[in-house]
Structures are given as structure tokens and as C-alpha cells.
Length: 270
Image 1 (cartoon, one colour):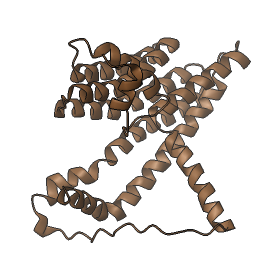
Image 2 (image 1 turned 180 degrees about the vertical axis):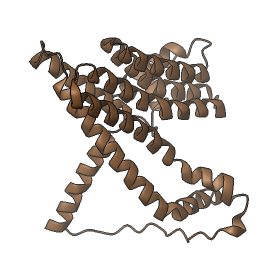
Image 3 (image 1 turned 90 degrees about the vertical axis):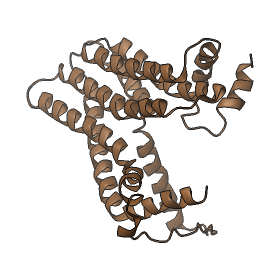
């Protein structure tokens, strides 16, 4: 069998997934799975089950187990694709399981964390954490679904009745040179901050952020019954998720024709 280095080149080049939080370790699991009869779809099913068990573990108070299981689910999210690429066994069922996992796992994990943290709160703050945690969890799932709506609209509506809809011309990308100036520096800095906030919503990064915050609480507040840091982190995450969902829905409304036109253009060029 190929070495780990050879498998990385063969299975991880130009592929999605976090290069450090996922791909560094996922290839070792892939190398274990490849000689067996375990299929890529079975890995995808295991990924979904493990992710749901992680949320259940957190909800029941088994925090260390929950963090371990959710990270294992994140690794399996990379393993299923690597196994499929190695064996060249791609299937729509596997894609379906992957999408279901993305819709369910992150929101449920965040919701379970909110319920667990709320157990240590009293009065109004308990209600605030529960309400914002629930709303934030729904926002995370809705953002995932919203990101695929333009493809669904293309398949279900435009492709069946193209004569009913007019799509804009897809402009060609123009690459220009930018002159360094204070305004461009501020825009670049704002873009980096925006990208950092957006990437913090990815499940892998979110899990690491919550795990490190949990460790900080254990070190600095070992005797505290409440979770001061996690409480505010949940509130911030919920607020950011809701704001991003609102931004994406409004932006999607004004850009949906262009996004559908891009899907049409990509299919036409193949």
C-alpha cells in the first residue's frame, strides 16, 4: 500500500477541508479503512452517527466524550471523500449523507453546548443562553441550507421552464492591479477580519474555539459552578450566526439571478 505521504498527494491535493484540523490526521484513518471492506458511504453514515452521539454526550454532561466524538466526526467528514477518491466509488447517497451531516451536526452540537452551559446559570441569564443558543443553532443550519438554494432553484424551476425566467449575462472576471494606499489597506484589513469571523463558523474551528475556552475555564475557574467564558462565547456565536444569516438572505435575494446564471454557465461550459 502507498505511504502516508503518497496518499496525501493522491487524495488530498486540491481538496476541500481544513488542511490542519482535518487533513493532517484524516489520512491516517483513511489508510486504516482502505484495506478493509468498509465503503465510503459507511464512513459517511458513521460520521453522521458519531456527530449525533457527540451532541447527545454534551447534552448529558459527558463533555470530554462529546468533544472527542465531534472531532472524530470532523475527521470522518474528510475520510469518506478520501476513501471514495482512492477506490473511485462515488455515489449520490454519499453526497446526500454528507449534506445531511452538515445540516444537522453543527447546529445540534451548538444547541447541546448551550443547554449544558445554561445548567450552571440562574435567572435571566439562563433564559438568555437557552434562547440565543437555540436561535443560533437554527441559524447555523439555515445558513447551510441557504447556501445551496440557488442550485435547487436552477434544478427545480429554471431548468424546467427557462422561458419563464431571464438571467443576467455572467461577466468575465477581470484581474486588475491595485495601488497600495491607506484606503486599500483598510479594505484589505477589513477583508481579513471578515474572513476570520466567517471561518470561525466552520465546525472544526468552532469546536477548537469552544474546547480551548473550556480548558481556560478549568485552569482559571476550577471551582466555579457557572461557565463564565463559555456563556459569553455562546452568546457571541449565536449573535454572529444570526447576523450572517440575515446578511446572506438579503444578499441572496438580490444576487439569486446571478448565482443561478453561474450554475447555468458552468453546466454549459462542460
